[in-house]
Length: 365
Image (cartoon, rainbow, N blue to C red; front, top):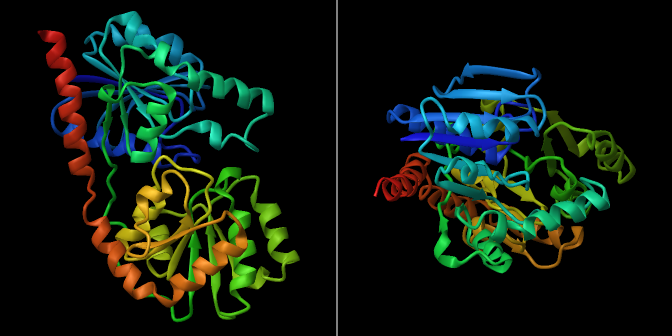
C-alpha cells in the first residue's frame, strides 16, 4: 500500500506524546512490511524539508501547521499516487485533502478536545475548536474513523458519526523499554502524563501534601518540561512538600523507564484522555495507576485490578486513592502487568493494516 499520514505535530519534537508515538511505531512497522509510508507534518524548524526518519519511512515536514494542509493535495497525487490517507485529529483541525484528491481517507480520532481546552487556548479559540469538532460529521462524511478507546468511540457517536463508520484499535506498549524493575525502598509516586493544564499536575502535588501526613517517607517524581514547571515548584514550596518533590525535566526513554519502573504508583489527574498511554507504560513495568474516573482513564485502568479509579475530581479524593494503592501496590502491580500483556504495537499495526487494506481493496473494486 501507499499510505500518506498527515499530522500537525513533529513526532520527534519536544512536545511529542502518545499520538506521535503511534505514528512512529506504526510507520516503522508499515515500512518494514514493504508499504510506502509518507508522513506529512508540521512543527519543523525549517520552511520545508524532506528526510528519511530513523524508523525507516519518508517524511515531508513544514514549519507551522497551515503549510501541510496546502501541500497535502499535491503530495497525495504523487508520484507515486497515494492509495489511502490518514488524517490525524490529535490537534482538532480536520484534513480534507483526501476528498479533493479522491483518495480514501481515515480520520484518526483521539479524544474530544473541548473537554481539555480550558487553560490551553483563549476562550474564543476554544469555542472555535469546539465548533470545528462539531463539523466532523459533515466535513469528514466520507472518512472511516479509527479511535483507540471505548470512551472516544462514544464521543464520536455523540458527535453524530454513525457507529458503522467507526473502528476501535487499541494502541501498543514497548514492553522491552517499560519492564518490571526493583522498587524503591520507600514509597515513590511518579507523574509523567505531561505538564499541560488539563493534566492537572497541581492536583498531584496537593494530593502528596495529604499523603505525607500518613506516609511521611513518600516522594513524588514529576517528569517533563514546560512553562508550568516554575509555578509547580512554587506550589510545592508553599505547601511545604518541596523536599519530597523531584522535577526531572525531559528524560531519555531509558531514564524514564527506570524512573517509572522503580516507582510504587503512577498518578494521573487528567480531565480526560483518548487513552492513558502513560498508564499502559506504567502497567508494562508492573506499576499500578491511580486516576480520576473520567473518559479514557476508565478504559486504561481496571478499577481494583490494575489500579484505582477515584470518584470526585479533588486532590483529597486523589490522596485517598493513592494511599489505598500504596498499601496494595504489589497486588495491583501484578494485575497491571497482566493487563499490559494484552497490548503490543505489532498487533496494533496488523489491525491498522487490515483496515487500510480494506479501503484500498474497495477502491480497486
